[in-house]
Amino acid sequence: MQLLVATRNRDKLRELRALLQELNLDLLSAHDLRELPEIVEDADTIRDNAIKKAVHTAQAARMLTLADDTGLEVDALQGAPGVRSARFAGEQATYYENNKKLLGLLAGVPLEKRTARFRCVVAVADANGLVDCVEGICNGTIVEAERGGGGFGYDPLFIPDGQVKTFAELSPDIKNRISHRAKAMQKAWAVLSRYLREKSR
Image 1 (spheres, rainbow, N blue to C red):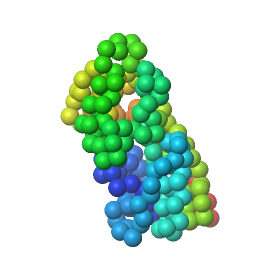
Image 2 (cartoon, helix red, strand yellow; image 1 turned 120 degrees about the vertical axis):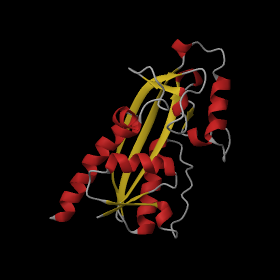
Image 3 (cartoon, rainbow, N blue to C red; image 1 turned 120 degrees about the horizontal axis):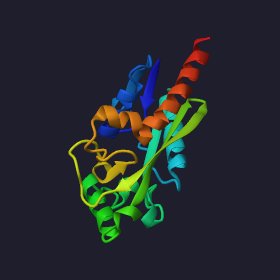
Image 4 (spheres, rainbow, N blue to C red; image 1 turned 180 degrees about the vertical axis):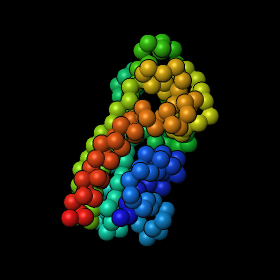
């Protein structure tokens, strides 16, 4: 069975492929189906964005679809950037620009008050509508300068609890065991497995 991943972000797709590699699914991305509409992520919450992307894409493609939305919530910034994480420094902001803005807002904040969490919501939908929606959270701390050359997004600034390295310094294998997306995908794996069992009856 084919699974459409509703993203055009190649970095995110690479992580999702690694997390789903043991499921007997042929993964396609939004890049593979050129007629798919661009989904505007204008919802007020991460959960609602994920559901909107999954449902609208599944209906357009008439395929089983997985979509995720992820946000970084910084306690010292009252939960910002949150749902606007990808667009924190502007609609077309680069990873570097978003990180620079975040560091600027946290200038002078001591390390013990730089607590944060990544929140990832994964929605699964088919042509009939929403199948299920699950969430994964990874708590950690924002460092004072970018560290590491791996990962993407805010990874160079985020040390997950229990680690001394940022996500950008950790190997992909370790990140894909402990990250917010890994935790959400473990739950999504169960959703997809149940769906496939039911469809095979």
